[in-house]
Image 1 (cartoon, rainbow, N blue to C red):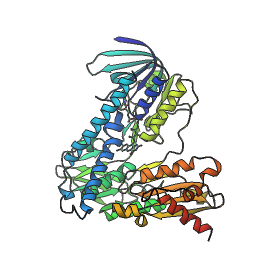
Image 2 (cartoon, helix red, strand yellow):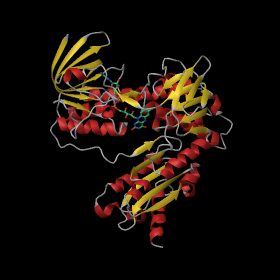
Image 3 (cartoon, rainbow, N blue to C red):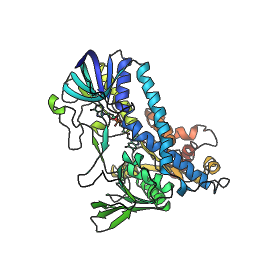
Image 4 (spheres, helix red, strand yellow):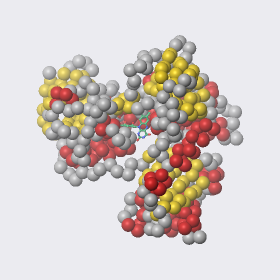
Length: 465
Ligand SMILES: Cc1cc2nc3c(=O)[nH]c(=O)nc-3n(C[C@H](O)[C@H](O)[C@H](O)COP(=O)(O)OP(=O)(O)OC[C@H]3O[C@@H](n4cnc5c(N)ncnc54)[C@H](O)[C@@H]3O)c2cc1C
């Protein structure tokens, strides 16, 4: 075994959390190595999750826009778009991302060990590389950033070529005419929009009564309406009983007695932390039933010198937050002040997209906060009329006495970008975080950001009538 000693930090996993921890630690002057078991760097985020799904969504939006554009109508029939072609283009984006991320490690002199990492103690990590060679890394600290994978219930046969999860859907070599998506969380809803955008019939099976019920109800209702309008059938409050696949299709039998038949099933019902077979028990760590590790506010596990960040610690399980967790964890290791990940915005890349930050109307009502609402409908904005992106709205929730902004909820074109204007104002101290900022500020015209001014005036008029 090849012994490599003197590391200050060994990071296991090169997704957003591991990468950010490694980069921040090396900037702090620590000697850092990273271990990654996939052939290239970037983590599941780059290879199977965020990046491919967002690239696919972008392509599908272009298909939809082309179809809607009166000058281009007839040029492209969405039903003639092949899934494999979309995946080929998506791979180009993945490759570019891998290139960029690999350069970070070279530039910042972080040593990469390709292979699977296993903990032998709180300061020893064994790596078996792809050639079968063993390396023993001796280190002062370890960060577990091994991410997550799609949850597979035992009674569903994921080896069948018509049963996919959010990883294997990227290897699908045909374009189904009808697909069942089981699980209507963020990933299921995003893929439902991608497939309906291609004119593929979708049955979206939700185990809850409402779609994405953590969202503001008005926004969640708007998503359900638009999904249905695009041809998606949403089955609420359903649980599967059995999945039967054959050479011609898949039948999903539901507990309610319904039977759905389609060309393929995409299973999007939860994720498990990647903590299996990596020596947790050897060092005295135990993951919960979802494979996740518990950490304190310094991202430390119960074992001295072992930290964990990203999906492997559970909430919020987002690439956006994982980058911050990685950076903050490195600060903890370097002995700096540690910050917490709070006020994480929601960014849901459905078509149209959804984004929000702060509290919902339900939460404010429950907490008996005297709030008021200001709304701007995109159909009335000059920019939206020019681009033809008229579906959507921005809703600002604010305190009716202090005018403090309490929540921003946006639905429609550029929602995931627009929300950050409101987020920046909400983060301001005291009197600076009020609705008045949007009324007193000159916005570029015509822009989507102008929605803030329209919504703020709408809101102020409600209380000053
Ligand atoms: C379809 C989909 C869409 C998503 N869309 C978004 C989005 O739009 N926005 C957003 O913010 N988030 C999104 N997410 C979530 C986001 O991808 C994850 O939160 C993020 O990838 C978590 O990062 P991570 O660093 O914890 O781990 P990961 O990205 O999961 O990477 C972990 C890495 O560790 C490696 N690894 C595991 N075990 C070992 C081991 N023992 N030794 C060596 N290496 C190991 C894995 O192979 C992997 O490469 C999406 C997820 C999915 C599945």
